[in-house]
Amino acid sequence: SQTIHQWPATLVQPVGSPLSLECTVEGTSNPNLYWYRQAAGRGLQLLFYSVGIGQISSEVPQNLSASRPQDRQFILSSKKLLLSDSGFYLCAWSPLPPGGALYEQYFGPGTRLTVT
Amino acid sequence: AQKVTQAQTEISVVEKEDVTLDCVYETRDTTYYLFWYKQPPSGELVFLIRRNSFDEQNEISGRYSWNFQKSTSSFNFTITASQVVDSAVYFCALSEAGGFGNEKLTFGTGTRLTIIP
Image (cartoon, rainbow over all chains, first blue to last red; front, top):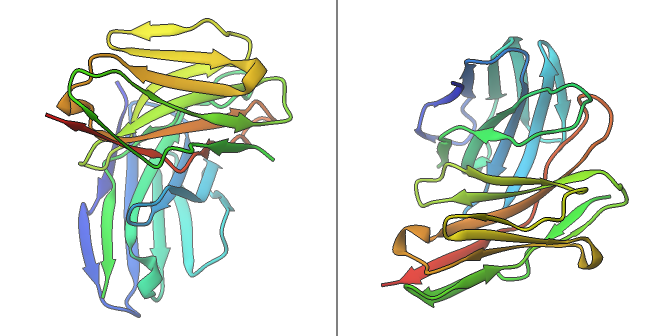
């Protein structure tokens, strides 16, 4: 069966510090991968998605970036964190069935980031 | 552009009552998929159901049921005999069956459901 891991689970970082969040998926090949952010009490905001190694699409221009160095690894980074980067970061994957229709996304446990 | 509206921001019901969460969507496509997710206090989103636009049959899974009506662009979710463990934020989502690899989910803003013991 497929599983998705995220780490760290919680993180407290000062403003201006760098960030690296990691997401890995097991039990599947060539998944679509996604990064979402959820501010406190708010809905989900899609940040990045990737359909393959090295292929990243950005949904919201900001001081965050994403990379996919391996098929099942997705990394969210920042060189300098802002207070507004605080939130709950969720990684998700979805299979790529024939025909291109998007099936459901499966989410990781999330990383709760507090920028102080 | 596609859009999902969950007009109910918060709902509270007493345990064992039935509750319906509303979801209204907008899309120009004739082929699309609808989803419901549950986000318990732990934070992880749990997939509940997927429905494609060609299948309007209602679905029942235990205490959960879903009513898909294309005529009103709605995909409502009913919990029967609610329990405290049902307390969570519930998200409705939509995806259009577009080109290979370009599909994305559009989420509603969520409904926070509180079951009072």
